[in-house]
Length: 158
Image 1: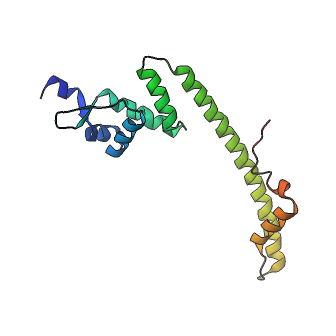
Image 2: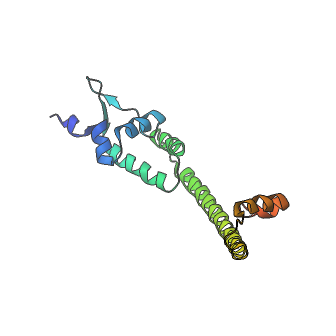
Image 3: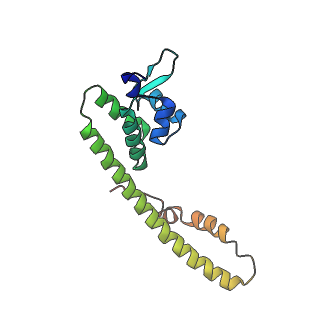
């Protein structure tokens, strides 16, 4: 084994070391999250051992909401010698804003559903074994006051 072969990994070994599939490694290379791999004389892709850390960084970044497209942009900038730190920070700020908006939407949905369940519980008490048409009340409610009944789904714009 040569010194060079000790410092590189084939795509399957990289995938195993990083805890992803070989298809994921090829996909990351194709979209630019990983730099283009060198090839052996037999055509196998080989990556530097440092690619393991990059794949792990990508996996962690995906878990907090970064997209592969965003990560490809960031890594291309970094690989070209740039410093994409401000861009990464801005992207993370956007993610946090979206998460907060989603939480607010979920809170309003929860309140709406609690009120709806209370209404349905009363309908079930009154109907006692009869059809209550609970889902139809959603249609009636929506037809009667579309804007009021959808408030729980709207995101605040202010």
